[in-house]
Length: 85
Image 1 (cartoon, rainbow, N blue to C red):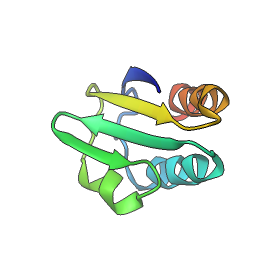
Image 2: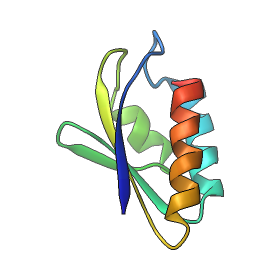
Image 3: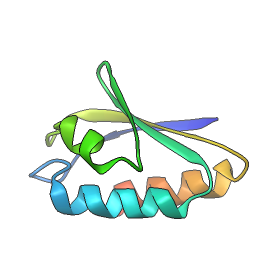
């Protein structure tokens, strides 16, 4: 298992467009990817669950990657966050 924390920089937070892109990116990965904000955790492939977390700019989320291809998937999802959120 690998994980990182990330503070959202997008002025609208994780809104519909980047949430959809995040789901698409997570589905392309072989590993399971989870996002946690406070006491809420969601699988990164579940759009409505991610939207329901209502992550706003300046809030920090924890991203956990676990699976057989976790090293590569970790780098992929971390790069996605850095470039899009």
